[in-house]
Amino acid sequence: MSTGTSLHSSPKQSRKSKKKQLLKQETQRWIPVQTCSHPVTSQSKTVWKVQLPSASSGHEYSTIGTHRFANKVEETVQNHMAYSIQEEGGDANWQLVAEEGAMKVYRREVEENGIVLDPLKATHAVKGVTGHEVCHYFWDTAVRLDWETTVENFHVVEKLSDNAVIVYQTHKTVWPVAQRDVLFLSVIKTIPPRNENEPDTWIVCNISVEHDDVPLTNRCVRAKLNVAMICQTLVSPPEGDKEISRDNILCRVSYVANVNPGGWFPASILRPVAKREYPKFLKRFSSYVQEKTAGKPILF
Image (cartoon, rainbow, N blue to C red; front, side, top):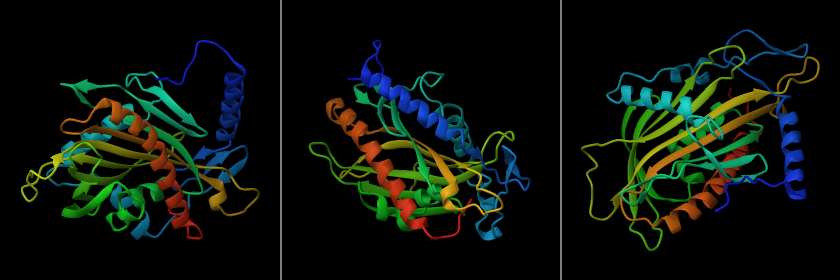
């Protein structure tokens, strides 16, 4: 299977290198946006972070909360911030396996007792939306079935706080393996920048938990997951004194999934499907968020 790299140059590789250089130049026009009240300045242009009403400012999402899974969530968030946003190499050892435009797919091949546990990551750049908006639609159970095509049904088992819920869902069967279900804690959180050069980070973590109201059943195999949608907002300063529009914003997305299928699931099926379906999902979901936010005030 191709790793997305080659030891030999070719006309195709040369074109790819030029494309990467153009993409790098395009990205350099964008600067991070933060929730602080001071302006962000680039090339003599000043961009003010739009202050939103308190009900939607995201401040209620700046803490983990005091529920019984708070420590587990904090540890998971810190691990994702340390390893999941890395690209090739690094301590996380992500290997590039596919690339299409601004989207890249990485994998780490991991098996335990014959079960494929490959962590997978897809990165993307989505114009016209913010990290807050992308994470909101990913976390909000009210719109889950609008974009999620693999879920058969789901329900909220328990609400732990304003930004944390426990969800149970069953997934559509993939022949020839048994149907899977998952029980997970879903948390949305904003992480302030560590310095003025970093953007705000929004993150949704979905991590498996146990709950007395949802015991194991014989009908489904219980899968375990640790999924993160990590988003950062960049702004391209508008000309003059014009207000920031959706043409001026870009969301940098990292979607990471560590899934234990919980039983027999052949690597010959799982790996090709995951490599194909992750980019399809991210493109579909990104388009959904763009459509839902078009014409609406920007939610930073």
